[in-house]
Length: 158
Image 1: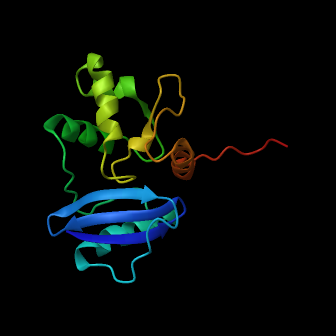
Image 2: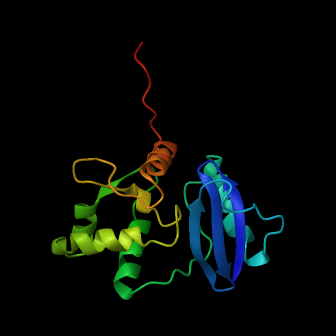
């Protein structure tokens, strides 16, 4: 497994993967890790696409993913990939989409264990009432990501 650290507007982003795909993307506060001077070949496409995302030049990702998780977690993460850029979905809606409204807590738990920050867009899942509920990276990061992805910026009337 190769590891790289890059700067992002939300902190230092850690990317882990190999020839089978990217298995982990996480964020930490600046200063937790040094930014990588050399990026392994297996990680270069992911690094490039993440940088483009933060620059507002990319709305989706097409590098190979290889997250580790249970079959249920994999199903939830696949469901997250279907939430379009700039859109949100509630935990209840996601549970219904996955075929079991009673699994809402399990869906929320799998969402929280998503190992591929931003790329598998767990930040697009919100409370039924529209609130920004739980986010491993901190609610301020979730708000930043949703604002970054919102194609219709609210403008002042005056």
